[in-house]
Length: 112
Image 1 (cartoon, helix red, strand yellow):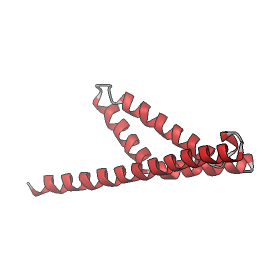
Image 2: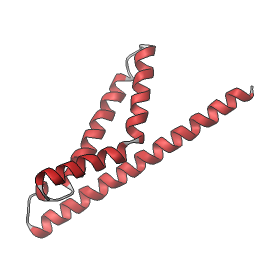
Image 3: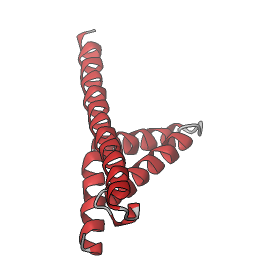
Image 4: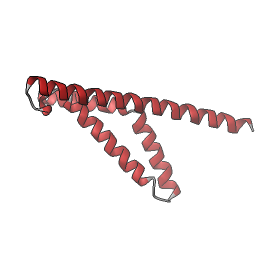
């Protein structure tokens, strides 16, 4: 009986960490959307020419990937569902890193 409670507690901590990471990702994404919009209006430049645009692209890519993972969860195949849940958890956990990589790569490639 105690093994079940340990597994449930570990799963609860994993879910908590993944959701906190996803929350940090969303705050980073929202910050760059607002800052990029304000800077583009203030300096009369295109939104694509701000440093925030790469981070917005990264956030959009992560959200798109999460959407497809949720779409594949509708498949009633047990093995596919387990794989998709694992991928979805990893993407949610590493979403702040993914958005940072997209933003850094975009800014260095555009020399912003």
